Length: 630
Image (cartoon, rainbow, N blue to C red):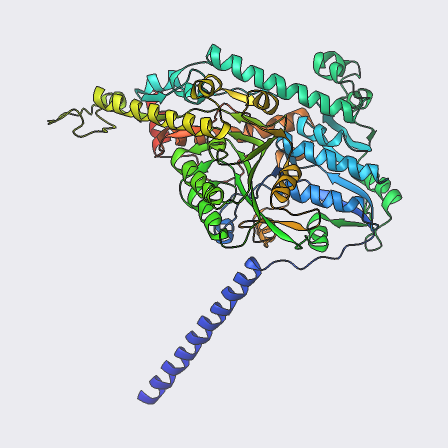
């Protein structure tokens, strides 16, 4: 029996070892799949198919494969704007591409600058004699900004197309906080820094309304000019002036109304649309499915065309999303992560640096960390340019101050030079629960800050003085960068938000232009002629298999609300994003944050619906909800 027992132990040990070995091999293989770069896919003669699923972004968000697989929520699709424009520009001269198809069935939107750039690339494809077709079940403002540049705009016969114009409503919590006994202590400098108003007011202030109204008016004028120039037959005044009469003129048929007003060119389902593309680009020899046509998809096409690596290196660092402390990102601008990228590239023999900004700002300490890293390039006499995308406001402008040349588009939102902080204290809430605070102080700052007992006048004064000092530092940075007196900077600062055109007039921007203009300027300053330089995006590790992960965690039967083809489906997108907005507001109030240079009043990014099966929020939110019902 002793011998049999020993043999059994050996066999069990071998079995356990083999299990561990196979598990190790499995995880090594999984890691290799998730971290490897895809091989170029086959590019066929036919159409270039661009599936705009989700949102168009400056920088794709990082996706943790393990977290994504374990999570019960599906990530929203993201497509980089520069990938789309690069593919379109290559397709214009590529004999294999007979037509371009842009599928916007599940498109959620993008920034105005990005969409304008895509439209201009579409114009170049059409100028090369190639048709560009779009298809969707529903067209909204962002869809139209792209589709206006197409040669054929297709809409499902039961679909809808509307233009509502820019604008948004903020949520104001002062009444709720008063009812809950929460004291939102607001510290700010500047009459127009509206970021704190949701916590201190029940409505927008007159000063903020005037400033944001001027911004939206400018963006709306740019939108209308872009759309009508690209699509002269569009009856924009009819569509936006009296939408009810416009729709009633077609008997309530939204698709027919869109066709009559020139919003779209043809009505047809996906099979009919595909048949039309097959006429232009060729039939798909591999599929008999109705609506199939010969096509190469965007990821495969990008992998096939590659990017130039000749000549001098022009570094590009991307600052996209809210600026936060630490190593967060991509998709969020972690100050330490971006500063590390810049410092590591100092020894990469870069001929120049372009800072691409698409951010509403955020943490002052993170913004300053990035600014100092950029300044180290200037200290080494490396040319530095800033290219502003949709937004470079507040902290986004802070990080632009070391640049020699600042480029922006007329649709860029910038300025918002101001700082603030909001600190909630819960002495009133605690009192509702029968909790009070008392003790002994040797000074007015003893035991401070006290979130339950409240702040002393000395603590309040100290915090406001800190805010005032930070604002003074901000003004000094802008004054030195723009070579204008501090008093003049203060007059255009105080939290005021500007469109790119006004920013150029008041001296915050040097010239109109996007990334091509910024790169060309940087190359010229570096002494490189056309064809003698290429852009190197810092921290860009290329495409990973995150698209595979997105497919694994997204069930096909769970189509996003945007895939619907009527007004109710379109409004569902906003409804689904409301929970995320409320949670974000609560976290912004209660989270641990330092001084903020953040433009909350700036035009919001495209709504990202929350698609999760997780339970309702608990903890603080549950407590607040309970108190609200008392």
